[in-house]
Image (cartoon, rainbow, N blue to C red; front, top):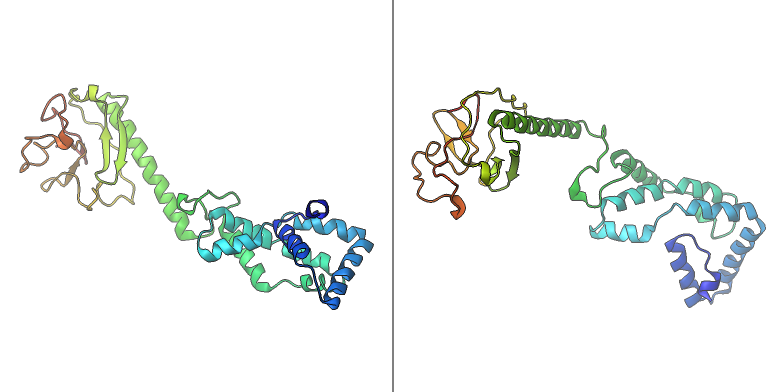
Length: 275
């Protein structure tokens, strides 16, 4: 029977119709109020046709409210909530054409819901990522501080890309890459076949660090991987233990893997000049 009469356009309407059939009314006044609403919609064909169109854009507010209340809502759930709440004024305007007991409560929309919809639409992008941790959820221009941090991040990434390009030109190693790990910070990576190659004795101008870079790359505990106090420069070749860390003897290479030559023939530095 439910399959035969179900013409609902929202998940909430489908669940409500199922409850009505499973739990029929026993109060005569409640039965009469529901029958009056059905008769009013049957008499007004225009209203009966426009209401499903307006409700078609409304998402499952009951499920969205449950996920938001439990703290498990994602970014797209928030956007769906904002889109659904923004459709309430249209539904309320259509409901003013009716006078039955079921349409009258729909004629007014709580202002708190409209305020919430406006705030969500102001802050959130139209197509957000799947999870909140991916970023990119807040629109550009919504927060001046956030826009500044985003611009700073873009400048840092551009500086790292330019550094990688400069080092490739200086060393002649086309496969050289700038990498990052939480344990060692930023580092230069080359293939094992290029590890025994000596760098040319040339000085290339390195890109000036962006304003946001106030300290060299750091390791997990916040201290540089290896440094020389006299020059305050950082060695990005983590396997160089002789020229960069005087007190640490190069008896065993890091991670138990020996490079082709030990210690390495050259040392890569991040600083104004080579050591």
